Image (tube, one colour):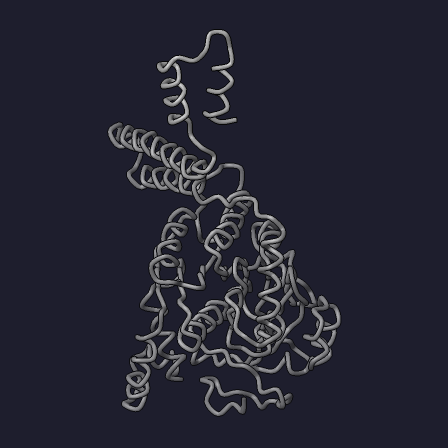
Length: 422
């Protein structure tokens, strides 16, 4: 049915069709939107709706600021929440047909088969760990947890350095515990292999200074971005991470550490509820930005309180089981020497009663108990196997290194890491 058929049908009626009536039909036809422009029209409607939402949000923010009934930080946090909620509605993903998703999956499988790098994979630089994880994958939440003093910040920083410096992939590192200056000193000591205690005491030699200077360019040219805002909220992290990904092309976000963050809505029920919200928000942020997020976390005291095995378990994640649920990968950092086992017999019992993480226990139980040896235990992996790998921890340098695959009975490392045969 169109203008020609309608006008012809009207002319056949006894009343006929006058010129003015035909002109009206033409006017009606021209004022009617065609289906061809439907998508553009819907886009305009959506944009206008967003503008109206922004106007309402601005009115709420303006009223709160004028009332001056709350601290500016609280008003600012509410303002960020309102704006981000509008942005979230705008960026919400549409339903996609299976055919499109299958084509994308086939292309990724083909790239893996042909040995070509894929955007969803970021190698950690530790070859044994990468064999289990196949690197960090896009949109994944990876949790690295341990008891205090195990070196979790050092390992998170080492992984970030390798990704930023060696792979040239941008890293956004959010430190809620240590200052940016402290982290940079650690990075310099790790790269230059200078004992961090000598730096703290001001006892570095001219040779040490030369080592530092030689590493300045290597660090300065890395796409590495540090933020040491204390008590960072989920909203603040989200806003900063989005800017880093959009403006700097960052491919990995690191948070040190999860339990020091504050939730968007401070609830009174319990700290467990707040941590659960933080955990869910980090997973949602990883999906939204399509980058992996490495969240460093602290374990509760259960490993220390166990009479025999000190091996960490998923139930040891401090303050919330939601972390285990939300994470795509959960890794534990464990150093047997930290617990100072009194005798080989007791150490053997501890190993026997610990949880089974696949290749970790069977590789070499004696190796796990040697000074300077750390285990990274992959206790959960949503799309892959669990397992355990050994790393060398040069504590003086705050540096982790892969263990030589052919070396299974290392000598005791020196306290600063010098002379260890790894």
